[in-house]
Image 1 (cartoon, each protein chain N blue to C red):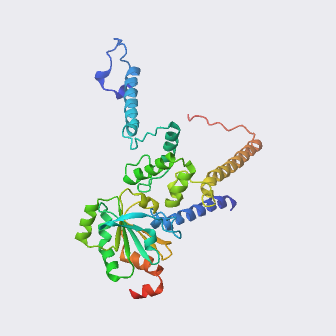
Image 2: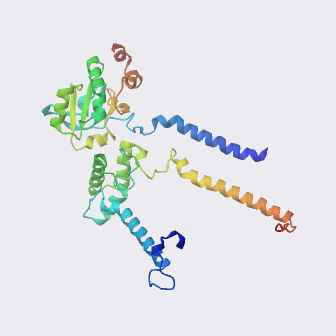
Image 3: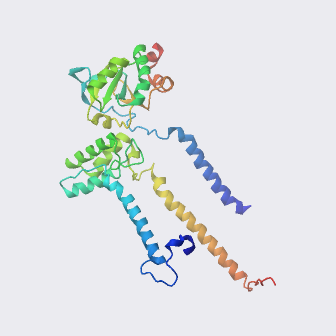
Length: 179
Length: 173
């Protein structure tokens, strides 16, 4: 009996470790953001369609907003674009764009052709703001509350399913009821 | 050995051809393999992604060390020193500028961890969350040692019990 105890125990341990690995495998490649629960990183950037204007984090305080990192070079951004337009149409929450390391003219052309889902687009030409936000690939979408705290981060093209399960429930009830 | 080589390579019997024996053939082959490997392994140096050269040699050393221990978050299994993607070069720029501004290595690490999490460090720091990562190898080694010692003791105890000479097999007749 005793001679089976040790191998069986070792086997059970291995099963537990592997089961944990399988359970977490859908999250593989998605790195939890250390920004969740912290203040949104501050920035002060030019605005895409208005060269006279700049946008700062402080301008956005006092209301919920979605912060969407995109670029015309980003293929998956095209994929999520129509859904972003839907969010804009719903009027549920403003979408703020961060045009990451992009060509301004191409970005304007993109919005003219595909429609503009953004209330305002900040331009991050040298990629510093993206690093401050811990962005490692576009598209990435953040949810920020009126106190300027990052509530949630979504990596990859935004889908209606992810929107319904991850974003909408985090919004205050009266906002969620409007949709 | 000789049987594997084509016949025309074999020197005629009796005629001693200097430097064309089996050993020199082997030597040439080894040299070729060595050369191939040398060329292959030196390729990354030739195609170095990062050609940054800081004026201060001490800073350059720290720069190289830091960029080799920070993960490129876009490609995830390369360091930012090795990755050609734009994000990695942006991150190298941050490291460079922080070093030139007189920041310490830990300042740079903290800056990156605050934005990207512990995952960005190829050498995770010791904390409550990473303790198992650092301690597991030692613990496993200890378990292995204990098992090994026990097995060896049991075996040597068996030798003491069984002193009779081993029965010899006789070849079949």
